[in-house]
Image 1 (cartoon, rainbow, N blue to C red):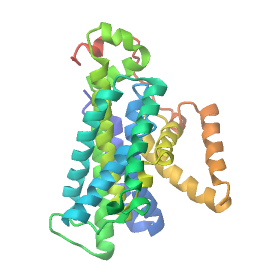
Image 2 (image 1 turned 90 degrees about the vertical axis):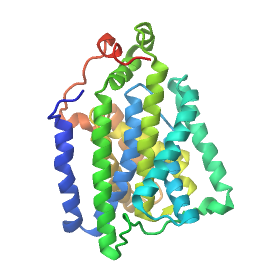
Image 3 (image 1 turned 120 degrees about the vertical axis):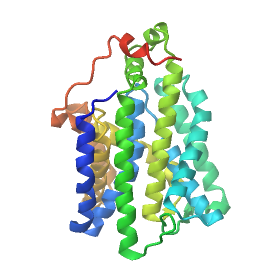
Length: 327
């Protein structure tokens, strides 16, 4: 259980009003990048909590896309525009799909886990790209969001969606922070160090991985809904391997030392991409690759290591955490 005054949670709560105030003092294009990066940042958080268990998902775009398309289909086929109902659609779709797929993926580790997650993501990419009712490769647009019957317009709508995005993302980050400090969270760290010992101590590593996979899927779907509403559009590229690779890139760039790291790292990646394209339109990917290479060489624990964060709790003896996790 987390402390009543957990530093990370206090920091996130302090950041919330600052993020909201940014909408009133910064240029609209900067605020737009912040809003978009908050949505994709949730997907990076989904990758990050799996990395805590030693698992790298190269297909996390799957649930980013599931969330966005579930919201889009709710709007397109049922005429629903309420933010909270669309979030519910995305969460339910991701929960059901990840619950089923998790029975397969929880049995695999290392490169097999990474490649299977990528393969499943690309299956959805192929299906969506060939489905004319959903716009094929072009996707389709979403209407402006409404809020429990209230339908603001113009800047009011933009500010309302931005504010709710900030609140939802911070709330998700706090929940994931508590998850990482729960018995299952510590079991994940023990799995990363010595899965066989975890099993000998009577805790099911498969169950812990399955729970983590579903948690990552749900939070990624929320990010997909918020991202889709911010841009007003969804398309199959949301689940393409290049999109999933960006989430892994962010997790490596920012590090896994703190739940806030992927959120910050996602915004830095967006800004880096903007200036990389401006400086070198034809070879901007080379700039991103160079940054990633330098980060791996000089900051193997990610940019968060620059802040001098405390070391994670040792997991060499997982007995103290596994005894409460159960089957």
